[in-house]
Image: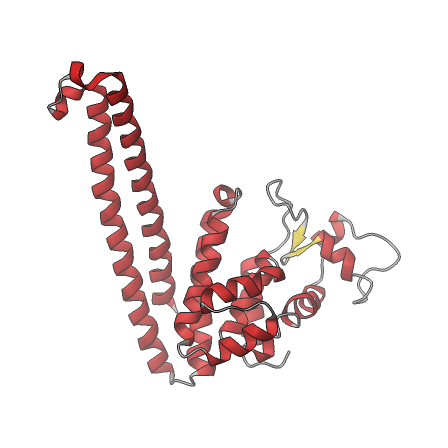
Length: 276
């Protein structure tokens, strides 16, 4: 790949994908540099790594970096037309494809673009025509975050995924500002600082919502156990009323956790932009 952003993109992919893993909660099985044992078997002979036999878990553990780079280029970068995408959005699509599958690149791009896109060619055309590349990049990473939050493995990998997505968003924005918009380093830094402030404010707002909702939930929970604390006659309330109060308390507490999660995710973004 010859795109100016590719070296930085691949360097970050290797950092994020890390080394060998064989986590029982990971449906991909044995993986190294983000390359599953399934893909290793698919490309091993073609790229001159292992021929004449199946790739083993031990092979995956010892996978050479050059092999992973070839798989990244052939299976992901080429298929999303990396070099034809806007700077920053190219890395955005590459990392999403490696982490979640190349098949999600077009539908996620369509959501971020807010336009009908059914092919990579559509995405290339529409993304290059998008008037605000920063906003486009940020919307894509938001779509991606929403997807991984819905996965059953979020409880296992959510903290790491959240930070990866925050850091990835910032790198993508920085690549666009540097190579696409061709801004000076000083202006790039100023822009990232502004985005950090926006994310920090969003985090504080969500934290405030968590505090208010959690307090209301705690109060309702107390009331469900002792209706007189709410000035309600227990006889008039009845069993059904007590159940309704308990349900309301649970919903409020769940909403508080939702706000806490949003506050943490925005803080990840704020920290990433500040460090960018």
